[in-house]
Length: 187
Image (cartoon, rainbow, N blue to C red):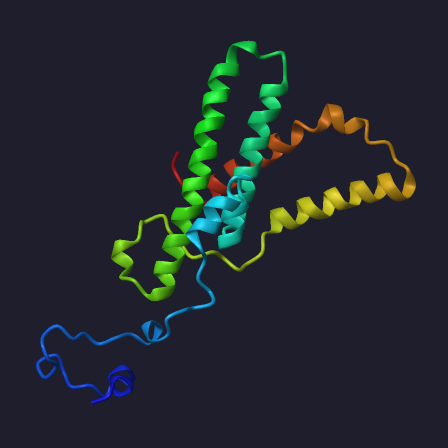
């Protein structure tokens, strides 16, 4: 019996197969799957926080990592919080390293899922990247593009953004709370 027949499913049952020979899955018949992601490249790209996650396909997670790092850097640049500088510095260093490790781990898990590894061996929180869109992300990009268009095309001043930009995380937090309440998740 040839290997092609074994893969096609015409192989003898387990009792007829010699000991030590297992039935191969069709995915393993090809040594290279073009959909695989390089964990090394994902780690390297994550030196710029979030880029490794985006490379693997976890866009939302990548953008959250970018926002966390940018927010912490903005807080560190603010001179009004000198007591928090050591704590924020430690958090930034930890989060940056976590970001690199997370990207490599996600790329490895992604490859394992492509190979058809037993789902019981994958972590519970692991899911393949979603290919669906995000209404909130789309609305935010449209609003930001519209404001920038008003500035560049119609010479509208953006001075008001200096005072009102903190409303963005407030609105995002309110949206997350609303989404959690609607879905019935507990804290």
